[in-house]
Image 1: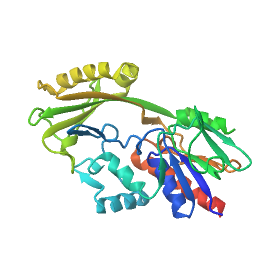
Image 2: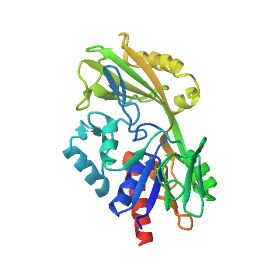
Image 3: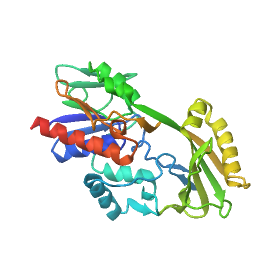
Image 4: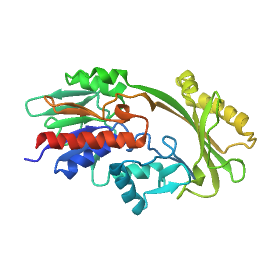
Length: 315
């Protein structure tokens, strides 16, 4: 009988784990609290404007991730962006969608608890059992969400992974700006040194495959500034970051679009130090960039290696 696994979290780690299991003949259902996939590999569209408001680019060093990137470059879902690295095309989320091609994805399902019954695993939301085919009979579960969200899921399943509680993330406040052409004098990116508020500015309109006609920028606040302002309303964050942007760049033009986004778990500051976690007796594993480090490839490697380990251990 074909094994049926659930993957909680449709970020890069969850997608990578699901790919491995599907390639081995497993039936896999990937669930996420959001409507879309990719986690911080995200693209926000607003009218004529488009912003990569999470991860701005990624690099590929190891063989497994390099092969995946090369395949998506060949299909037009990724491209090289100057000296930075690769980006998804026409948006960062395109890369995640390309990786997830052929997977069964179920959105708008925020899983809050795992319970094992006589037939298998049941995934629950705050409202009750998740509405997904096969729930109550999953053979195993992959937890692929940030460590602070993974800990209560593991606890609900009767698993204690002390290392997960030590994983630390920095938040990030992001500002999406759109200006008329010729308004901002800067190159494709700017990494100011020593600025209190701003850690990175990217000109999204310089990336391949992006809409023409506007200058679109994403401003990422520093971790310390983000921590201090994370609980403020997004509208207030936008005002403050726009002021900091003007002071840093000297831009006086008025943006036609200025919206802030808060990322609570944006950058891994202290990783687990293991590629993944696995509890054989429960048939539950955990993966993510929090296991290895703060890179898109780290998330992929963690999920890919967990998927491969599950297949190997079940042979």
